[in-house]
Picture 1 (spheres, helix red, strand yellow):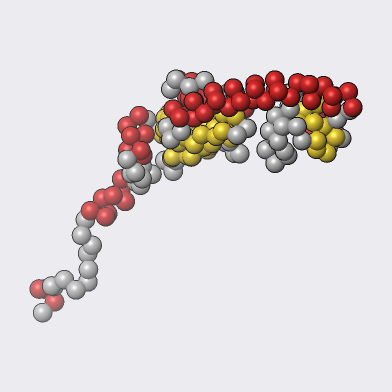
Picture 2 (picture 1 turned 90 degrees about the vertical axis):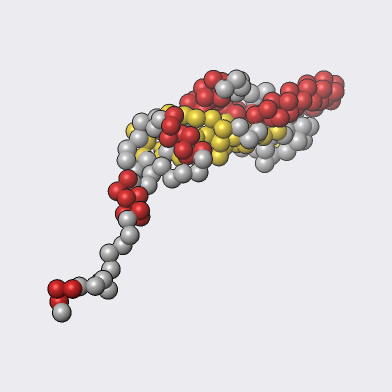
Amino acid sequence: MEVILLERVGRLGQMGDIVNVKPGFARNYLLPRHKALRATEANKKRFETERVQLEARNLAAKGEASAIHEKLDGQRFVIIRQAGEMGQLYGSVSSRDIAEALTAGGFTVERSQIVLNTPIKAIGLHPLVIQLHPEVAANVSINVARSADEAERQAAGENVLAREDDRFVRDVAPITDDMDHDDEE
């Protein structure tokens, strides 16, 4: 099915491009979200008359996204979750949880803007991309920890999964066989 793109769509094309896509992708994603029009003669004429307005709207949205990008890029957000000794979460951190953490941090972000290929299922620092606009993306870091103290230690670079008995063994001098044995003589 041929469609006219009304905005830039990743791996597909720029605004105004006429591209051939699978009918399901057009019907279920591009058309309902007003990202494209069917490539009929009437729609081609309609697009050409509205092109300037669409480009102006896109430029304004890109400007807003760039302003948010300046504040959001490089930020760290903490999410507290319960986890086992080995750092495995009792559940997962989804895009909804991340959107709530960003909202609590003062940023309004939709769940659909968070690029999360798989849910986060372990504690640690997780880099993420927030797609603010088709042409603007911000990089953030999500710090998933069991407590606020643990989150601070993780942010400082400490491995919080190191077991306490492992730390004790590293601190004690190793016992060797070449020690003096007075009773053997």
